Image (cartoon, rainbow, N blue to C red; front, side, top):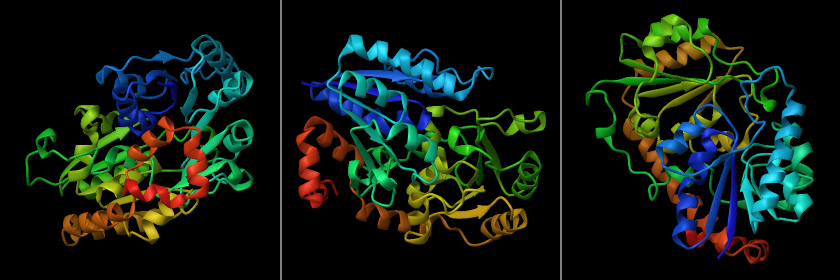
Length: 363
């Protein structure tokens, strides 16, 4: 039996690990969850009845502290927590975990889906100390490729693979037959979002003007919304957001995470920001599988034209679901692979290095 520590820093990490956590618990592992205070992460865990500990010093609401100060302070806090726990392995996407792991000689497995050229700062401060980096095939970890364990899947398939997720129209509180559109506004304030540009309030208003006569608008936002947008705010159960996303007529956002989710679910989607084409996973979804479209933030008129083309064109539901089925047929069940990898660690590392095709049993 292993004592496994998970470190979550974003709502997406909850979805990434929730099935893996349940698998490990069912197989007898002792699991501990540590989180940073980010967006709705705490709410998601509370609604799922998962026990967790907040890492002191990670509260992003405190704007008076520098990012470096927060990183140092929260890393020290995490070190103190882990020193008492003494886990066999630490898993996560937080930089804080690798320093505690290195000092205490506890192996750390870091899950990365962004290329190092996009998350350069994180790579510089994290990868020298991490033991192994689990990444999808397209992801580039640069000088740290020797630590990389590539797999033929995506983060989002850990919870959106058909074995993990079955869409339920009954959980969508919108009448069957009524079109609806999901808009997602990220705050673009993460360390890798320096100088990032996305959907401004002005552009959002134009999108609303285009869509409002064609269906219902649902907005999910990390940033504060103008008063006039509040009536569109998503008010459903946050645990059901992927059911809403599956049946939506269109997703538009400046968040790459939700764009990947929409693509994997086979929902027409557009991402609008100034880091289009910089993330290999999204490039693969766009170029190989035709499941997403990126438009740079310097091309607002192209965005409006594309949106009008989609909402005025033929029904894309069946077409995108067929593309999704093609994707699923070529990708492994990420959660099953992760479960095997952690349960059999560190021997699983040797297996993957000697025979990368071993993972095909998780197709």
